[in-house]
Image (tube, rainbow, N blue to C red):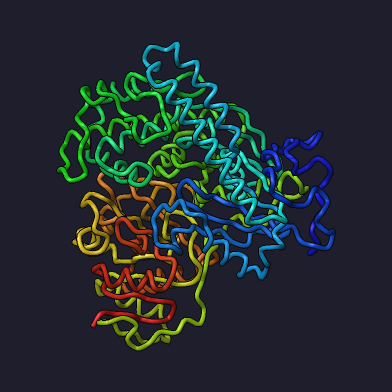
Amino acid sequence: MEGRRPRPGVGSGTRRVGSAVESPGAVVRPAGVGGPGHGAVAVSAPAVVLGLCSGTHDSAAALLVDGELVGLVEEERLNGIKHTSAYPAKAITWLLSHAGIPAAHVTDVAYNFSPPGYLAGALGAVRHLAVPSSAGRALARARSFTNVYRRARDRVTDVARRFPQARMHAVRHHLAHGRYAFAASGYPQAAVLIVDSLGETATTTIASARGNSYRTLHTIRDPASLGYAYGAITEHLGWRRGDEEGTVMALAALGDPARFREVAAAAIPLTHNGFQLDPRLLPLRVLSSCYPRVSTRLASLTCPARQPSEGIEQVHADVAAAFQERTEQVMLHLARHAAHRTGQRRLCLGGGVAMNCVSVGRIAERAGFDEVFVPPAPGDSGTAAGAALAVHAARAGDPATGVAGRCYLGPAFPGLTLAETPRPNMVARRLLAPTEVVADRLAEGQIVGVFHGALEAGPRALGNRSILASPLLPDVVRRLNETVKFREPFRPFAPAVLAEHAPKYFTLRQASPYMSVASPVTAAARKIIPSVVHVNGTARVQTVTWEANPFLAGLLEAFAARTGVPVLINTSLNIKGKPICGTPDMALDCLAESGLDALLLDDWWVTRT
């Protein structure tokens, strides 16, 4: 397929006249870095857009060739460092090799932040000098935003030097989130709500999207940040901010929100079209870990900061419950405002807060949308694809292809060969009927790791890099948490179910292919599969179709043939503190270091001797 020559003014940071396509940001070519001008790409050459998330957290790369998504890969799945900020060299190498494209043929590189936006944050910090509760942090805030601007600018310069023949685009962070969320939905039109901690100065945006058009209608800027607030509470309760917010969400189900409801409401007051943060409780953000995010006043009204080594008490659960409830209320308020501003019947969600599946469930139930969609990678790794999509949209008349309905976008290892003893104290044998063997073992009560097909994008294992278990066993949750995942005993496990059987067990009225929505369960689920029902009466369900994942669908069917139940526990193939296994060696490490009974490595059955 022939590539498209960039139209004059399009792709250079301008808005196309008469179009609602938003500019992704200026073409960046730092001083001293070479590269062609517009029109340097030959008409016969394909447009090759490399999208990057790099230098902050959850580094990733994505590749579009002639407007078609080739892949999206998180670097952590290949280098083994969870939430890595490293330049995604391994991901880029795999993508270009997979596409058969030399690095020199990349025509555009799209970075998932626009550095000048941080300068606006530095200048805006001055106004906080006039606010008594924030004045003490105003200058430090200005310095921190300036420092982040410099680091982001230097990252863009570094990337540009790596691809001297390509145009370099710095894309606004929330536009990257929104472009990916909408494209992945496959909807012809939708409202888009992005909620995270910070992208330049934006923390929340509402947009209307239709085809190739994307219009931001409303922006809430820092210091009003729901992601900042939830991260602050996560850290205060003794877990890693930016990593273990899901633990706080799970703990919240064990708490009484009424105990600290007024504190949470005061810390995050609602406004007509959004929300604010009270700096007396959640202090003004400074982009440095040296500045605490919870005030002494908030601690005195709730509890002292918990150290990770300390036990979990009821007060911690009650704090988690109050702030989880407030997060749900704010998200529902924002979703309803998005419906009002856009008039759309479908909603796409993105940003780190979109991973709060309980809040997404509340929106699906109560916001009045016909359908709510969260992409497979709603966090920053997905902005690698979103940045590339934004560049494509600014220069092409048609939306990109190969994005909707796709999550298995990373490396596969066809033709993998293992030795009979792949590791000391391990034995491997090839299976002729993997689905039947795995279904037999699961029905017998074994816990099995699965490494099969292409790697998933995003934080949820969706059947290709999963740990599977029977939901019919009374002690399976304890075994998984204590001997396999090594995590807190109150953490729940998600069910995967054949889509056509989902209504028997879950009340969710829509598909949930990416395990993004906490659904209330039916009486049948409580009776038959109580192990997947959290104490709040919900389950983060994955609905599985034959079209999306024939292997997992076949496994669910085979398990149902043996047990009468087309449901399996599905959790990620990793142990606490490590990323989802992206390579065969990482999968073998997981078997060696955990209480897994066996590992299916493509069609190899690996057990400990």
